[in-house]
Amino acid sequence: MEPISPGVAVVFLVVLAALALFVTEPVPVDVTAIGVMVALLLVQPVSAAAVSVGLLAEPIALFSDYPGDALTGFSSQATLTVLAMFILSEGIQRTGIVQRLGALIAGYTGDSQNRQLGATIGVVAPISGFINNTAAVAILLPMVTDLAERGGTSPSKLLLPLSYASMFGGMLTLIGTSTNILASELSGRLIGRSFTMFEFTQLGIVVSVVGTAYLLTVGKWLTPERIKPRQDLTEEFGMAEYLTEVVVREDSPLVGQQVQRALVETDFDVDLIQLIRGGEVFLEPLGPKEIKAGDVFALRTDRDTLVELLDVEGLDLVPTAVDEAELEAGGSRQNLVEVVVAPGSSLVGESLASARFRQRYNATVLALRRGPELIRRRMDKVSLRVGDTLLVQATADSIERLDANRNFIVAQEIERHDYRESKTPIAVGIVVAVVGLAALDVLPIVVSALAGSLAMVATRCLRPVELYDSVQWDVVFLLAGVIPLGIALESTGGAALLAGLVVAAGDVLPLVGVLGVFYLLTAVLTNVISNNASVVLMIPVAVEAAQSLGANAFAFILAVTFAASTAFMTPVGYQTNLFVYGPGGYRFSDYIRVGGPLQLIFAAVTTVGIAVIWGV
Image (cartoon, rainbow, N blue to C red; front, side):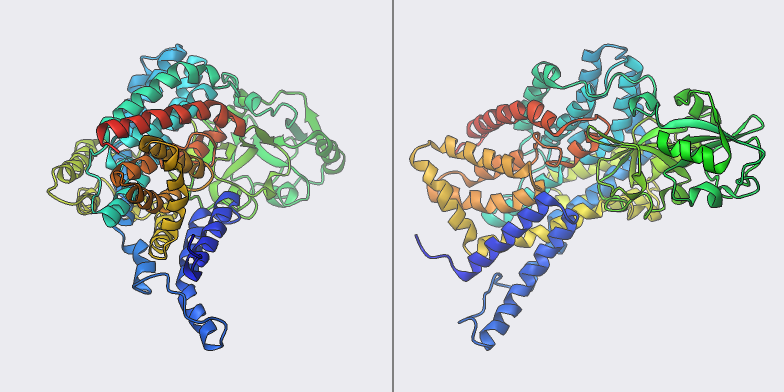
């Protein structure tokens, strides 16, 4: 075995550090990716300085074109294509066509869980082939939650299948996932063969059929009912001991004070949910209102704090049960909803207090659910994560604004008045043109997608001010940051070294077995780090291994691509898994129990399918 060169050693150290940061997430993954790029950029000048003082014999060069190669992530066709696809997906979403389609299908499902499950999979899988699958889940999650509620089904039974179906549906076309687009560019650079629009649609259909059959049978049996069929949101979040009503006495020291000075800015762990005065119900903003004797406040607090409040603040307990019906009495439309923290949200890493959630959104958070964990006390200081589900009380107008805010996904269907239904034929026509021009090789996908994005704005399907908000910038920066890592791994010989270790399996396994090994290695890696990062790391290794074995390198690239886009076994393996983690009340182990068998089935089906269709 040849000694490891300094360049390879440095790249391996960067890879190990990146893996540790991707898994533990002390900072968002896109920040880690940019950190990786900066670290790679600093190696050459730092090593040159070390040479000048006699610490190294020669500089360490990770790139043949410095610093150009390290910055190619920002000019990459994959990065620009993914950016454009976010814009196209937003243009479709703004027309409301997906919501109308979901509502139409929901009308036929009734209270049959089988039909609900079939409709969920049948809607999200094909849609995910043509708009970004992450966006598809974000759009359809409220529809599926409402579908479960109307049919008396646990949302837990439908939301995990929603996530899984979006993943295998994304493998129907090149543009279904950002991973496919990135893998296509890497394939073109390494072996001179990129993916066509429908390159792997044949296998994608087989995988989708197998996945659907699994979810409708074995998966249905394995998927737990973590949340009972919903009757009352306050009951679902276990709020019975945390919600109460109090009345302000004549002798209360609070009389004459503004709400924000009297209670909101105290040290008590208490939230004022609504004010009832003279038969009229007031929601946020309550801060400026002056407290009067006889005012009735609905509070979120615990029993110990309530006893202290009653003693100190001159309040009397009102013997009324505070449930969803009581909280919904404040408006003609829905004002109690579940809100999911979305990927890329500016609130990730912030607390409700530091983000000034109540003041910014005129909304009160009553409880927080993180997977199976319910937090109903001292929530203001909890650092928020992607997938956290907030039980929010607000006016209907505030909820509609939350629904339109990309920081959140409101987990119930909200009546929206800003859909551009008249633009539906135009938006759909633009996406069809983008796909058609790329499929017929009239234009490269990056050109047709960028032109389609411009057309969305030119035709007013999207307004110019909405353009930048439509892009998930964390994904764009993640791509830009990790692409140089793959280049460094390849140029220093690190990929060849890793490939040599896997090639050893070729002594005891047939080529199709080695292909399966690459699928499984990528699948395991993707379940603990970003899918895009795993593609960048594994495709160069797969190409080197295939060439060493005299195998079909394109087949190995496809195995890595399919494995990276179907991460079923952990909530952190794919963004859509995080979307449903809170709303479904799932435990970490649920993903292993339901997704583990599906991952193994896909390993066999995909490996055999690639061998049959493309050969090894």
